[in-house]
Length: 197
Image (tube, rainbow, N blue to C red):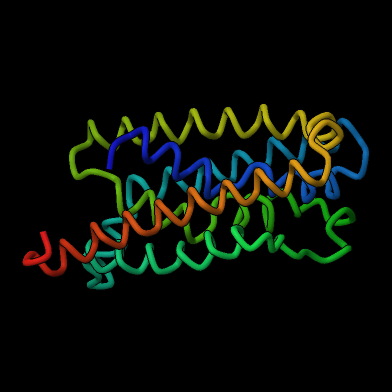
């Protein structure tokens, strides 16, 4: 998988459009609170994905799981998520979200931004060479910066988009996630069963 495909997959799986309503609710109309929540959520996202990039394969080896099997599992995890977004089903969160300062870390940072799908994608696609992992880390850092800037604009974007456009964009993200999931699944199956290659 190329770095551009990885970036598109991370963008789709992080679902920035889907985060608008969640972050808006957690920010509770306060600019300083929104900035703090955005910063904590993005730092959590960054830390989790960098750990997955550099040590994810080692953790798999510790449990005796092959990278190909993890790719297949990752694709199977992502596929229903993409189909769910295609159907227009939003993430459901409790109404206490705005009252909890830890909401920036859980559930916004993990699992909404860096969930099973993004972690699976990074672990499955991180190359063995340290130079390749460094490039993947740079993509992750660029995505984190982009997400932070995007989240800072939450109130303006929600007002500009409106419900209809927000739903259309969410379904487009679902389509991207579904395509990435199928590609990861195909790559994993080819690795498990070389006769398919």
